[in-house]
Image (tube, rainbow, N blue to C red; front, side, top):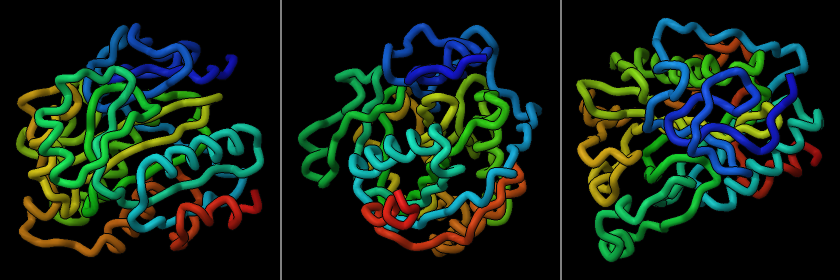
Length: 285
């Protein structure tokens, strides 16, 4: 099967056109993504019983970089460069773990209605940027763990890959005593109807980028400024809100790495703290 060009499904669909997974008619011509906010068209919803297939990690160790708190656009550009190098075989894969400075990101199905109050968004110090992923609006801010696995999609099964990314966070949350659920047709995780984690991907030549976000100690009032994932009534929650405790982010990142190894069989390095501007030099690129 040929790898897709820079194409994949947009908000809430399942996969690139050539992947054998369902296609979303809203996919942009040169921008591929999946963002947790809609149904999987043509193939049904992601089901929790769909076990992800294990990745072949025989190509070597995937380095894990802890970027601390970093701005969105430079990291998006970094992902694009790393995605191309992984696709070319220069590196086997890379995992980026970080928090973003406060930002509203707008996918390629963005709408003016996604921003509830633009002036208040500016007053609260949030940047508004266009993202290469599909979908509508979402929010990143300190206190939210963002995971960007820039890796070959195991067995070119994007649907199973999304399910696996969700499963990483299911296992992570269980370590902190929280049980999260999936919703049919809505990638991401929920607790008592409130969203705690989102999934948003871009696929290029069967290499993923972008990934997941998990609300740990995020200021949840920031979500009131936008229509998350195109759902006006969607409400968010966080690990801190659910447990009454604020776990150290380093502990959450360690739990993410451990869960990722369990779910996908990846061979991951211990997280190494770097600035986003140092990643390529560290990889010898």
